[in-house]
Image 1: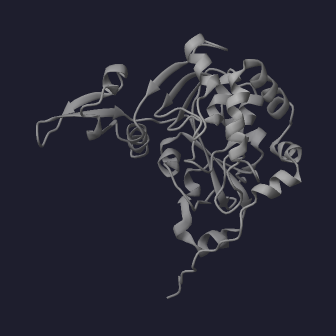
Image 2 (image 1 turned 30 degrees about the vertical axis):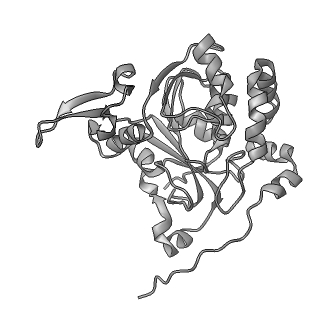
Length: 303
């Protein structure tokens, strides 16, 4: 059987095409900037970007001209302010027009849950009293067959490609995650193709020794990319911390179009790979963000 392990450049080239609907998942941590940067470097265009929190990662992709539509449920620089690349695209059509489609967090999660379950739609009780249905025609309603009450619905979402970062996986793509989980599993099962990016590749015996940590099974994974430090400036639980200084600095970087362009030129177009990016960051910065060793209590799988 052909190995699923490949490079980021090859995975993006093979599985991301112009016009695709893509999800780069991860909630607070496990946000794969390495994949976004490779998409930018390969100058993919007319993408529909989906994400509950399109923070810095999609701000960079939008500013680079990759996106024509954004499906989201909250937009901002977490704890630091606004996303000025996103704002320029919406308010001034710079560098190109950007269509937006907004949901609540649960509403967008529900779309992926429906996609994963092969359902046409998902009911969302929490839209009662919300004004989101007035601005998003995709939020509709049906009559409940049990109570005869009207209930809001959202359509299933089946992205062309899901990119999920995990702490570790084996060569077959069985991916293990710990720390905060979002909707990575649902996104992977909903997508037509899946790229799993990991901090380290491990033997399948490691995966089998702790099966409850396996969030995404290899049967739905098409490519495995080993990309240490691939989430910076986001974090990976147990590997490295969130670079809060960068999130704060992004406000000034993105506020001015010329400074954002300089960032793209220096840190994305100007480096050939994530390895080059990490080398450019320097060992002191990598060391500063390295996670301390804090082990969980072991469990006994014996019988």
